[in-house]
Structures are given as structure tokens and as C-alpha cells.
Image 1 (tube, helix red, strand yellow):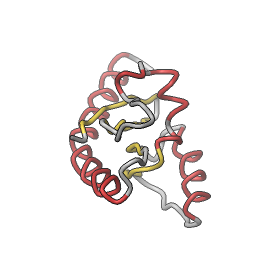
Image 2 (tube, rainbow, N blue to C red; image 1 turned 30 degrees about the vertical axis):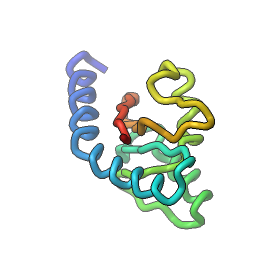
Image 3 (tube, helix red, strand yellow; image 1 turned 120 degrees about the horizontal axis):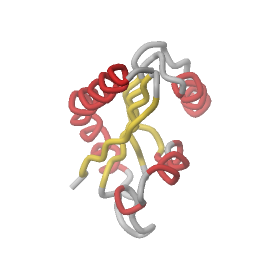
Image 4 (tube, helix red, strand yellow; image 1 turned 90 degrees about the vertical axis):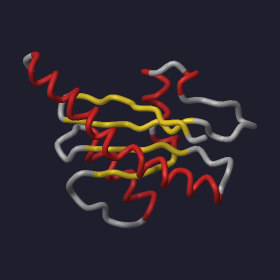
Length: 123
């Protein structure tokens, strides 16, 4: 991958966070209103990302439904992303104490050549 491909993927992932972040936050707030101590995360997976097939399979198993091909945007249990978060991101950016309500929504953007996280306040 040359430098320009990397640059464009970074720009694309930022644009995806800006485009889908507000709706993911709205969905998260709705879920947390019903279940205040839930731990959730957001996902934006491009169809050609390496993570997409594994993530689709996990979601299909979790929901019992077939997950369609294409761009995948939605919320999921945060436990699905925690191994990546723990390896890549300092806990103060996304983790709260067990007794606290969730303060930030971590969002994974997976592209063909990698992934990045965005973090949105839920207050």
C-alpha cells in the first residue's frame, strides 16, 4: 500500500465517523435509556474489510439472522470490540467503572487496510 492509499483510507474512515456517528449515538442513547448499565459500541465496516466476514458471522450467531452484504453500520455489545480496544486504546478513553453508566461510545471503522476508532460522548 502506498502512502496515498493510506491517506485516502484515513480520510474515508474520518468521513464515515462524521457521517454515521450521530445516528450511532442516537441508537446507543435509546438502548441505554432502556438498559442503563449496558455496554455497547458502534461499528462501521466496509464490505472489503478483513474484519467484515468474522463480524457478520458473530452478529448472525448473536441475532439468529442473516446479515446482508455491503456497508455494515450499527451498534453491538461492547464485548465484541473490547479485545481490540484493550490492545489499541488506553482505557481512560472508553472504559468506565463497573458501577458507572457508559460515558462514551467507541466506534470501530474497518477498512480494507486497517481500522480506526472514534469516540463519541453519550452525555
